[in-house]
Length: 201
Image 1 (cartoon, rainbow, N blue to C red):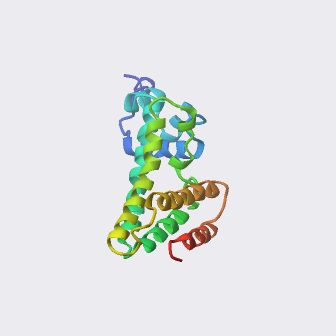
Image 2: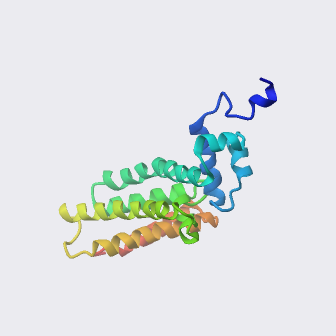
Image 3: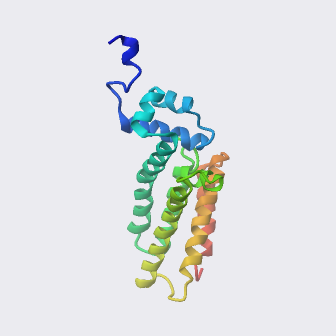
């Protein structure tokens, strides 16, 4: 087999995890529609035959990228929420960690899931996935607030669903602000301001 022919398939040194990470960054920065196959192949260091062989399609690659992104970030947010001694401190830690990570200059700005437009574009099979990932944060915050009620941090009359949606809406807005270049320091100020809405404050 010639050298030229051998490069048509998957490279012998193909690292699927590294390739997925590279694709995730492309989708994170450009979004699904604007990310071309050339963009993806160049970032992943593979040809289109290898991409299709490993991931099936652009849609399947995007779905894996969304899961890869969520798997990397969700545990940290969950830890910030759960490890704090009170619900209030947990929510504050959640927002402050979001502020720092969303505006981190070492990677694409903002949240890949929040910034994704596939839900509004109705991309088959992907819209539901993105919406489900967005709801994950809401469920995490709701659960922490419910725990706060059980542990006496919050009044039993607290509207958990409304309060959780408020803080998640703040976090999602911070994502857009980060993409527009707002610094982590400014976003932490937003987090501090949002905490003034805590019940009983």
